[in-house]
Length: 362
Image 1: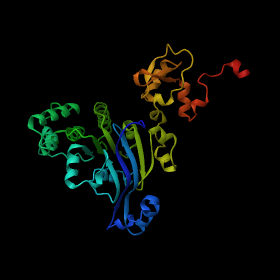
Image 2: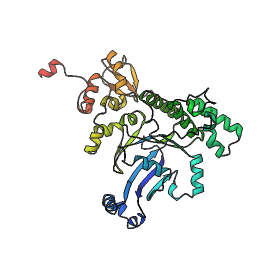
Image 3: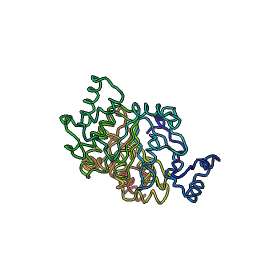
Image 4: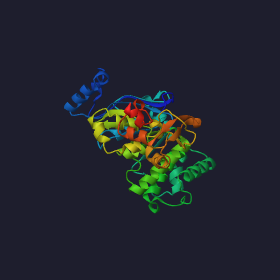
């Protein structure tokens, strides 16, 4: 996200430590200056630090993915953000207010009106129909029946469940059940959305379809989203930025390209080693300044992946003109620049036009 995009949520120095009364360990301020030392001391005393000094910002309209292997702390973090579990220490600032200082009643109102949550376990009520499941949080808010009906019908249409309003969860496929869970969380029109491995229980084909639906919904609604996953390729499809966690700590935060091409350490490098580079790069990221006559070049949007750009380049080997907002020209991409970027060569250091034989002889 752009540096000028407003920040919706700040997570600052967040700790979650399991064990009996870890509070005294945080009174000296060591957790801010030497978090690794404190984590080591906590473990030595039999405590389990599940989240260690976690810091990140979530921008308005951004999808921020938190990744890691099982036990890395990613699900613990999202539960701390929503206070489904009480953090040991830290701050979670939503719209300038520290959620960790909110009273129980204030927190209930925030969850009802500002937060949406979707988890791997769909959590549908088996005795309620699709419509009734989706309407459930609105009834808790005491939304008037006429308004409730309008909101429920809107999200049912949005997630592609029109015609299944009277079905019960047992009559739905896994993908349809997940759509109900998504619709239920969207019905309250949340400003911020927490999704904890929402598609991991689905088979690969349904999972991809749900990712597509999720992206379609996001294009329409522009929610601020924390998306938990252990699958880098899934994060690659949905996220604007990513954080990789290990043993309760965030190891690196960045865009997909930054994580793949500039890993912070061997762990991140290993974590991303199987990722096809061609799926990480976008046309805008590898566009070089336009040279020569570009009037006959076709155009492609900056957000198009290089993988999807390849067929266009195959038909237009002289290059493709890359455009951004308001059709502003950002530069060109050629087959040569694609090869250089995938091989790690900085295109800014190399001319886009290969030297002629005469130039080589000189």
